[in-house]
Structure formats: C-alpha cells, structure tokens
View 1 (cartoon, rainbow, N blue to C red):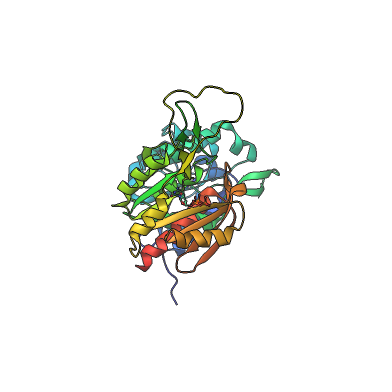
View 2 (view 1 turned 135 degrees about the horizontal axis):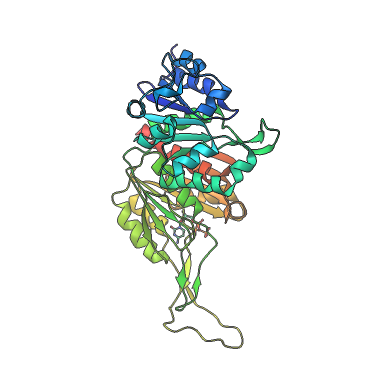
Length: 409
Ligand code: CTP
C-alpha cells in the first residue's frame, strides 16, 4: 500500500542554522521528502560546523546554498553559491529548523547578511520556524521580543521548542520540537483547515456600566478568543473578526476587531456578523445581568448597604442557536465555563443553546491562565478531553473539530 503524501507537489526550502540540533535536520529533510515534498537546503556557515553540507546534498540530490558570493570558497560539496532570489522563488514554504536566536534576531530586523537571511527576506510564502537553543538564551528578553515580533507582526508560524535535558547539560525549554510536530505544522500550512472561511469570534469579558466610572465585569482574559483567532488565521481563514470586550489581550495581526463593552453591544455585532459567517465561536464571558438603569452621574458614597437592581441580559448564543436551528452554517461553537459538574453542564448547554460544538472548562483552570483543561462535546455525540494544554493547543484542537465538519459536508 502506498503511503499518503500530504506534501506532494510542495517545494520546501529547508533552512538550517547553527546549533547542536542540526543533526536532527537531516532526518527532518527525509521526513519532508517521504511526505512527498521536493526539498532544497540552505545552511548558515555555523550550521556547516556541526554537519557538513555533503549530508544534505546527498539526501536532496541538489547543491546546498551557503554563501552569497563566490569568493568564500567551498565548505565541502559544491561551494554553496546559489542565488537567493532563485531559492526564494523555488520555495512554496520556507522551514527553518533549527532556528537560532541570532538568525531570529537578524530576521526580526529585516537583515540580509548571509544567504539564508537574504532568502528569508525575499521569500513571499509561509515561513515555519522551530527555534532551538540553550534555556537562558530562549528566555532572554531580546529573544522573546524577536520571536513574538516574527509571529505577531511578520506572520511566521512557530513550532515552539520542547522542554527537557539540553545538550549543554541544562534542563528547561530550548530543545528542538519533535520532528513530527514540525511536519504537522508544514502540512497545516499546506492544507489549511479553514481555507476561505469567514470566522467570527467573541473574546474577553463584557462590562455593564453602573455609572460613568463603575461597571460590572468578570475576570476573562480574552486569551482563548485571541488564540482562536490566531489559529483561524494560521489555517488560512479568509476573514477573522474578533468581537472584543474590554481586556488586555491583543487579537492577532490580520484580524478585524470590533470593540464592544456591554452584552447588548456584543449581541448587535454578533447578529450582524453571523449572517455571512461560516463559523461563530462564542469564547467571550458574557455578563448574564446588567444594572436596570445606568446612573448618568457618579453614585455618591452613602452609609449602609445599597442595593443595585439587575435585569437579565439576552442569551446571545442561545438566541442565535434558536434562530439558526437546523442549519449547518454557520457552525456554532460555545464555551461553558463551570465551577462544578463540568460534563453535565456542558452537555446541557450544548442542547439548550442548540450549538454544534460546546467546549467545557473549569473556571479554576481557565480564568487568567495561559493553560487549561477542557472537554469538547459535539452534537453528534463525540467527546474529546484535552488534558492540560496551552490555550493555543486547545484553539488548534477546536479548529480541527470544526474543519472535520466542513470536510464531512
Ligand atoms: N453566552 C451568551 N450570552 C450570555 C451568556 C453566555 O451568548 N448572556 C454564551 C457564552 O459566550 C458561552 C456560552 O453562552 O459561549 C455559555 O456561557 P456560560 O456563561 O457558561 O453559560 P450561561 O448561559 O451564562 O449559563 P450559566 O451562567 O448559568 O452557567
């Protein structure tokens, strides 16, 4: 039986920068080839100190690019001079593994001071990078800033380093990601799961004003919704709209943001956007009540207890679910944030709100945290438990469930 080749007809330029993980790049090259890709390789001079270009020339059957100009001499193999423009044009996808701190710093600045940096600057397709370095270098402020710049402003796709024993003897994050994860990231870019889809996501809390200076709100950080937006863009959604309550989380570059404060403002925006959406994900923590009246003046201090009459807010998702009942577009996804009885409550909300997918998580695990533990329930009875994952990983899993539904229809 022939193996599936998810990267058939894909041209990949594998960039290799200098670190001990270079020896793994040779295996990555083979894995990309086995997945059907045509691979060419560019190495930095430092990478050539760890593994000779001959290894990659033998694997790919092509010369390895190293130098910008012909006067630098050979480093084994052909001498390594290939035009950076030719290489950039060749590649559908640029994969850099391992990516060193220095390479990322230069790219964040837009420098082109060696062949790989020049190719990177000239390349117009997706770039996937898998950093690998010593833990201290990885945690350094400058590295963190460069990585987030490349991801958030340059649109690069990162496969983050794993944790464990490093070759230098340290323990911590910094080792090259599993090669299978890098391959998955390449496949995700090649076969994006939400290609051409219009995705609407609510994120963060709502705020219900009491008077001009006070409001009722909640502790939602907005991270989950923003990670979903990032993943939707990663999977090539045509348009990602984030309807965002007041919170510090920043939606990814490339998303369209509609800022709102109250639940009723959110409802107006959701209903308008849902008309043309393929997917609506309600990750926001919506306030269930609002003050019956908003005082136009600041309420004055008074002795004794005061009471504040509250009236219920509309159930935005519940009403949308009822209106869209029986339709398979847009796919509706809700979040059930619970303090007890997670499974039962999430099941109940899946049915009551008439949504396709309900993601349940516990408030103690999810609020103001970068990680969470969730259960994904579908109206077809499917149940998936995440275990402890980052919100990025959970977002990816949710997008995966959504994309399966598109694939089935
Ligand atoms: N939701 C909504 N409108 C509201 C309240 C919640 O659209 N007024 C959405 C949330 O964005 C979430 C889902 O409904 O996707 C479940 O929210 P949750 O607060 O867990 O449920 P509630 O319906 O508010 O029920 P309860 O507070 O009783 O658990």
